[in-house]
Image (cartoon, rainbow, N blue to C red):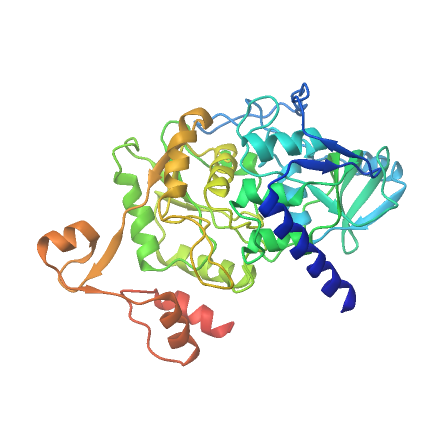
Length: 435
């Protein structure tokens, strides 16, 4: 409609102008403009005092796992009674609220205020020094929502949380995109999301959790997942946002043999099932493919869980975000794939990030974060020996087979037979049933 067309036009002009100027001018909500000067004195964010038994070997990010969920009906009713307004959460906000409340985003306890937002954008860290890959913000176009209000956040008829708003500000979206995505061009899906999906204002505020969202699949909390993990071995996380095919399976099972991983380590396959790129397979369908594969490949060293996280396609910065989240779930190691969380220009088709940018950034930040990055193997399928590394195939002169993602999707739509060296039959069947 006209409103969204105008919003897109304004966003394009805003981001384009800022990209050329690269200014750090930040307008306040009241309309005045302030220039970035000396950095303010940032205070560490408060943490939940909930005492939780940490079964897994890995310590939570920041030292304590946040748990903001109220436990009794009386507590929930009292929290709701304090609210003076209610709003519906967007799908992305719903994911963020759940991950704040259950501790996946530990150590934060709410949506970021302006000072915290700016610090994360500029420094890949919270004001207290803890690494944080991307800002977590509540966005709105509402003029009615104001600091000091306590508001009920809902998903349909279900109360999800309350938020006590602390401030309201006009974010520097072009600078945010340049710092977090490496570009302000809206041909990047993350920059497009910030420019056209997010509201004009960001608001900081403390979250109090009421109920978990109702999903087609269970997303267990960090505390619940930690309780299932061994406390004396390494846990290697594998992040994905697409169906798992043969090469992925070989990749995460062989990661356990990496020299950086201790004896008897286990792998936690932890797909994201929230909003992602427009052309990705929907989360509920991805979940179904994971479930059939989990049963088909069942073994004691592979665990499966699901994460209600909305992808930004932010490449290196998002790799850090994923490592931090999996640290809170108890993981000691994290598999970093080629061009992890990368994206292509919607105009030219060119990659926004280099193949190894995410790996290099993870190696740089890993020691400080306390998570060991495990670079993924560059595996290829050969007629003679199945899956081997590309280097090994070249050294031995093996004959490789290739199938692009585009060709796979074409074959899937056309009802053609998919080679079993590329994809599991059970996964293909689910994809065709839900096409």
